[in-house]
Image (tube, rainbow, N blue to C red; front, side, top):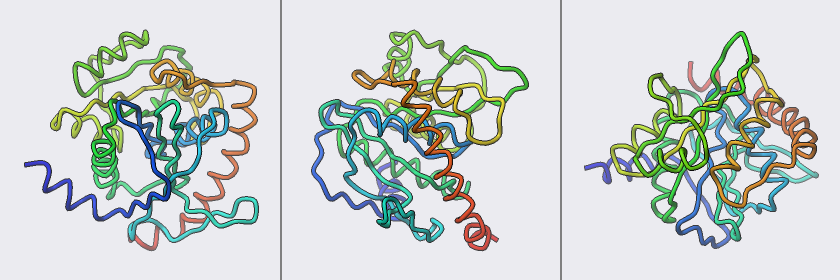
Length: 245
């Protein structure tokens, strides 16, 4: 029963792939900043330090109309990057999507992962708190996903609530028997946070074979990514507010 619904919602986002990919048995990392910016910064840093290449873009009538200029060239703010050697894909976005399309984004991601025979989707969410904590926890949609987390030495969350795109990915993954792991990392900030981004990047590298985090390089890239993400968010905020009034 889920397939027709998934197909209808999938058409609300336009995915254009302009390079072939081979991801069977591989991984998809969710880089949408649905709750905070750390996940977007961590994935952007991983793209620059692990030899990923852009293979497609994602667009929607629900996204604010904005172009990001990088090295003098226009870019879509939401892109797909792939490292074919590692069989890892990243959905990277500089847009903070409105809550009304979180389900659509999640279901599109699950549909794309199923089409490319992805074995595990990795997402993340920040846990706010007054004090910092080094413990990383995670939730899995299936027994396979939970076992992968245990093998990586990551503590399984037994009680809690996970909002936004990561929460929908878990629920839909459970219903459709798709493997989803959501990493919960701690952050004391409401904006971009290098420390939590580095913590998240390291946790992702434990789950995804071959992916690595060069911390000095990550800090450099994180500072650059933070500024670009802030500019994209500020530039699209007025448009987004008008669209969803």
